[in-house]
Image 1 (cartoon, rainbow, N blue to C red):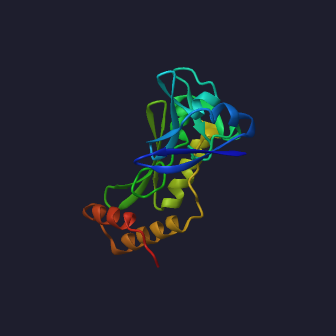
Image 2: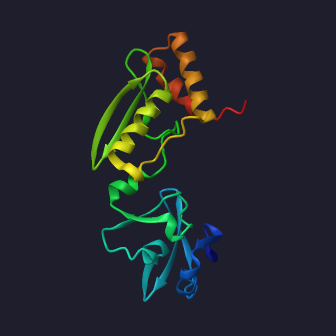
Image 3: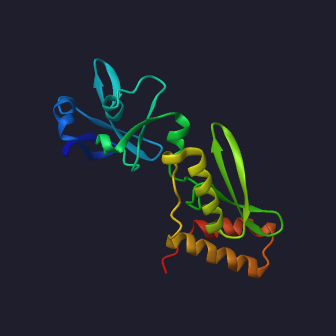
Length: 195
């Protein structure tokens, strides 16, 4: 494993990890950085064209995506890269929702419930409504494996954050908070409790 330096004004200096056998080819170029979907990638201008390091390594053609298995766009070892389609690449992205749990959101009719859903090739599949975040996260994880296999992102079912969200939700149910309280629950779910 070798390291290559990259720099951009916005993102500063970063280290890119590459395989020993790719170092000679890649170190000939001056690498800069670009952030996309909360991931930083290495890019260079080669023959007057902007190219991304991971795409060079995988010889990706137009329309093909390259996925970083561990979500680190600067880990360009071949063992961390794989070709995929757009749907598979999206499946391996982390959650951007306020709860931080992929495929899971607050839903309320009379009392706050948690809804799980998954998007597959542009079609949203609703997986049900649940009384806990953990149940909804399990439903999402199972559907992600079914639809995306090795490309599926898996929610961490043992995280402290998940436990805190379920504790807050249980409190809301005990208080009998109705649809009007949905905003309060969203506010609670986005707070990072440091207890």
